[in-house]
Amino acid sequence: MEPMRDCPLFGGAFSAILPTGAIDVSDLRPVPDNQEVFCHPVTDQSLIVELLELQAHVQGEAAARYHFEDVGGVQGARAVYVESVQPLSLENLALRGCCQEAWVLSGKQQIAKENQQVAKDVTLHQALLRLPQYQTDLLLTFNQPPPDNRSSLGPENLSPPPWSLGDFEQLVTSLTLHDPNIFGPQ
Image (cartoon, rainbow, N blue to C red; front, top):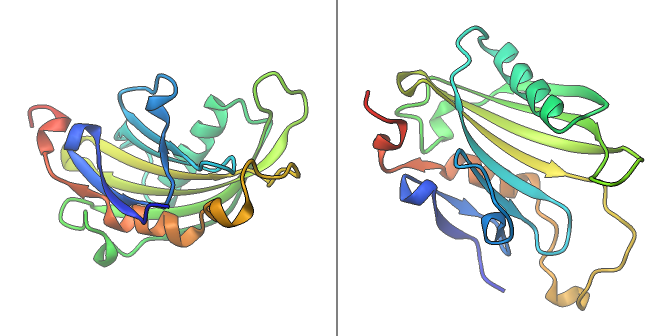
């Protein structure tokens, strides 16, 4: 099993440390150009890094809530519940030089998978890193669906453990910008 690794994102314009076993979803299906999506090899957990247009009409905690509710709308969530929103210390971020403000939000969204009627409460942890000089909101999302009761496909000792909040924190704090040209001419 491979250890955590520093992985290039968006064609090398960024990099970040991904947790053990992360599978690049773009190897499995199309992913929008403004997203990098990774899934856990056994659980239904996923990590998403998105480059979004700066939403200058919302500030502070309201910006984190705005993006959480927007994701819920895109995913067709039947209900969204914000559990907590906290400022994130810029000192801990590799992006501290270009990030003006950062927020961490935890909440739940009731989402039904494709072709399923029953909605499940999916826990989402999001980090919003605001880069106004690039007109960009960077949104990182850790989806934690409830564990299903089916047994894993392989022997337990060979399957990587489920990802933790620590894995998500490592992704957020290690995210590094290498090429600002990804944002276009400034």
